Image (cartoon, rainbow, N blue to C red; front, side, top):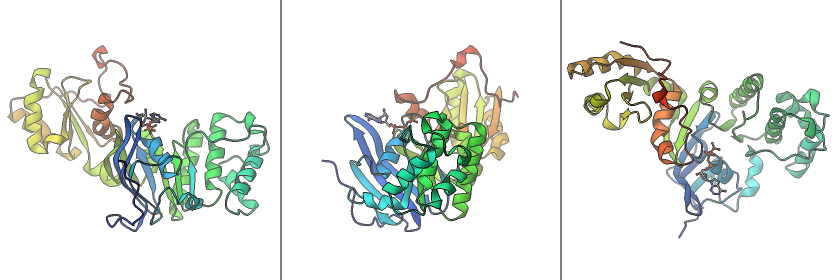
Length: 344
Ligand code: ATP
């Protein structure tokens, strides 16, 4: 039988966290969407919640905002347990999950006024303040039916900011925004974090998260695969990629595993011959030397700490076994080589 989220504070959850989950589980019928998800979101940061399509990001957001109930696990919001009886506490939380619903015939400003009237008491000037923050002040009098997708998205973010929440939960907030809009929203989130607020943002835009987030959590198949400060992740979780002859991959992987650990060495399924090694980029020469000492000569070598490579490595297995997983892109046998490749 499914367990209900505990009402007791979970002793393993650090009280300094703005948001935490432990062992969060959710299935839709026979499809497991969240498989024991553990999240730890410190107070006053922008947290980038990353995962490939179908990883469980929206499901997590829906659970955290009380739209659906988990089958098991514990949630703590702003230092206190959050259960199905606690939806009223969401006044402390601003959220944008899925497409925001607005009255199309009302103006942006009147939509926000209607939203403000349905929530906690809000000073009248707050509507114009949040319109200013998202850059919609000029068009606030236009009917929402005349807004572009990106403008509707910005109005949704304005709605999430209305109650001046201490915690913001935003599902793919950059959706539909043009590059200038993405930069503006990123600056807004950074500003909110500098005021001590916590901004939890899901995204599949890796470069975006890399520029915006202090802390990142990467999920795949409903589980956390890596969580930590962006800085640490980039420094300590470098990736070195080597290319060897396809029939040397097994021997090369065994040699490389001795440099790190077997679970940090991943032969590529999509690009036969390429092997990713999770290792600090400054050990690239060591990688090359250890292969040479084993009589294996790399024909390609690249290194970096690009989040995209890390993301693909960490989520690759889950994505390749999940029918909803990442779109694999163009068949690599067509001759595409990694852009960062350095031929030795
Ligand atoms: P995306 O980046 O594509 O939006 P996501 O990380 O937000 O993906 P979810 O939407 O949470 O992922 O989906 C997680 C899993 O749950 C997927 O396998 C999805 O097919 C499944 N799922 C989501 N919603 C439902 C639903 N209402 N009914 C059945 N299965 C669902």
